[in-house]
Structures are given as structure tokens and as C-alpha cells.
Length: 81
Image (cartoon, rainbow, N blue to C red; front, side, top):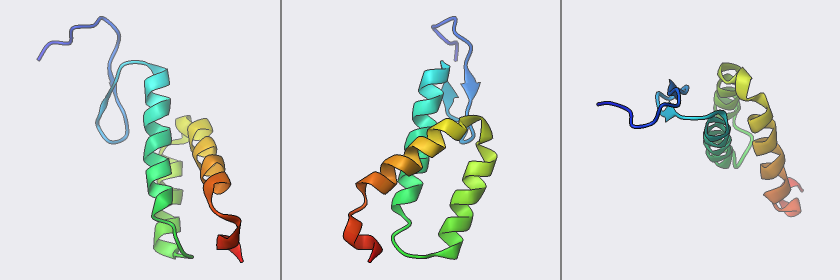
């Protein structure tokens, strides 16, 4: 299938097509934020998975940091005590 736009298309980590860097950052943010939602208790396998995802997505470091920061801000304070 031919692309209708002349913008370069690059596959991201999951093979989805990305037309611009901003769209890629949004996808990386959304993917990591969804993965963080699975971490509802101290789970080494989930933490390892999140660590692996972050290591594989080093160019998206700012998006991952923003996802972690936003997630921490959204978690109820009582969840920590």
C-alpha cells in the first residue's frame, strides 16, 4: 500500500507506523502509561517488564519520565501507606 503523505514513516518499537516525532512521543507515553497501570502492587515481574521497556525505548526517555511522573501524581496518596 502506498503512503499518501510525503513525510517519512518509521516503525516504532511495536511496529506501528509513526509519521512525526511528536506522534512517536505520544505513542511512547501512552504505551508506558498503560504498562504502569498494571503495577498495582510490588511485583518484580511487572517492574522488570517496565525496566526492559524503558531500556528498549531510550530515545523516548523524556516521554517515559513524563509517564512515570504523571502516574505518580495520579496515584492516591493513601496507596502508599
